[in-house]
Amino acid sequence: MASPRSKSPRPVTPKKDEKDESFWDKIGTLGRKKKIKEVQEFEQEGKNAIEMPGSPTQFDIPPEDYDLAEGEERSLIERRSIENAKLRALIALLIDWINDELANQRIIVKRLEDDLYDGQVLQKLLDKLTGQKLEVPEVSQSEEGQRHKLRVVIDAANNVLGLPRWSQQQKWSVDSIHSKNLVSILYLLVHLARHFRAPLRLPENVNVETVVVKKTGGKLEYRRVVEEITSTYDEFGMRCERDAFDALLDHAPDKLQVVKKSLITFVNKHLNKVNLDVTDIDNQFHDGVYLILLMGLLEGYFVPLFEFHLTPKDFDQKVFNVAFSFELMQDAGLNKPKARPEDIVNLDLKSTLRVLYNLFAKIVTRGK
Image (cartoon, rainbow, N blue to C red; front, side, top):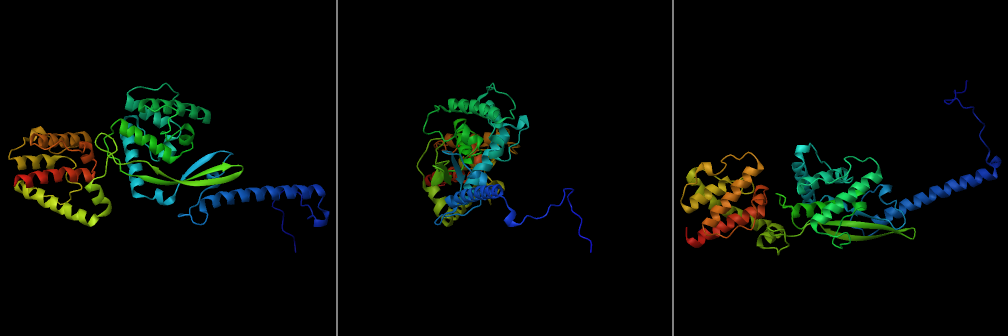
């Protein structure tokens, strides 16, 4: 029976007997085995630092995420934080904001880490927000060029935000953003959004659980850190105390439904007079139309249709309507609403409930 033909053109050499293995062959083999063992031990050490017993979460991390140089530190978001609804909402809101700001430049951001790390999109965003163009190269393919551009952009952002380079409050850096650290990118974007009064309501009290891994003395050390990306803010972007509506939304969803039902009954008592009906309090007030008509009905006057946008077609027209309804409320003797018109347009439930409850309280007090 013919022997099978070799698949390689190389000559077939007889298999060495173990006894024929030379001294240098043995040294080479031992060196390779030692190297492989070191790599395996290093990878296992990295995994153990993250997945040691007692860790609340277990998750798969590629070797490059814990293959650190001596003294290098890396922050990793725990899986349960990544899946947190508030964090997802914050990321989606920031992506939409950036895409809206840069729509004229046909820039579309899909993933913050992948699209902002090199400074290109951050530069375009800062140019748009400040109205001034940064003098940096448009495109840089090299890592050195990207870092240089990113450093210029971050320095400019820090200057606008009033943060010196050595500020302890600063949660971002060239290294962290270029390494696609999502927490650092979120911190920077939240600061920019609040500073420039972006027309959006960021989710409050977004906390992210992270594992910070650092290589010291050839070994990986880790610690857990909870990062507070957003807190509770008032209409001026300042931190404020949580109120009854915060507690209601967070801890008593059953009572929240009762409050919503009472407010729906209240507004329908008046809107039904003009054949309008509210069934979804979360969504039917965001364009300002029902708020304007409700104020006219509560105060006993007709609001001319040319004074507002009866069928608003874009964000600005909706903001105009809500702002107009706030003016009518102040004319009726109510305090200026704490919420911004943009909060109502962005479907912020707490803001909508606060506005409607203030109307409800005034009418009940007045006996109507």
